Length: 109
Length: 118
Image (cartoon, rainbow over all chains, first blue to last red; front, side, top):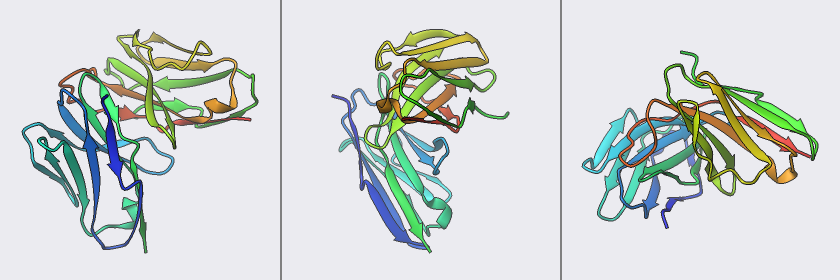
């Protein structure tokens, strides 16, 4: 069964600290993986996309990694800001899109 | 572009009432998706359209749910009769490409319609 699991379910960190969110998938055949950021009360917005051949991709303070062998991806946030407080959703593309249930991040001042 | 526009943003209704959610996709996007989001299950695809034609409605929970896309700039999701378990946030999204294998396009989501059925 195609599944995407994210961990942790929720996370609280202090402003300025780094954090890493995990995404494990059992989707086959794998095409690509996208991370979305969803602010409270808003729709998800794409942060980055990882294709099969990519290992690392950065978007400002956000860095995504992909290990296609272990079927794992991570999203690393550097020097967190209050505005990073949001849910982060991992979406894997196969024959259709498979969504994770997200990690809720709270950055505390 | 104004992005995907959904209305209403919030809807509170009583069990048994009809609910209609509306969506205007981004101009030029040929694909329109309706998703439902709950804390327990995350985002779930209900139905999607390509060029105004419903392609996959396997995610529609039951006959109480129906969706239409009469033209390229408008879609509705209707629930009749509504039940408390329908309470969720309903998102409309559009894309310039489909979501099959090797899909690399981006989904553009609206702000969502939060539905509460009492």
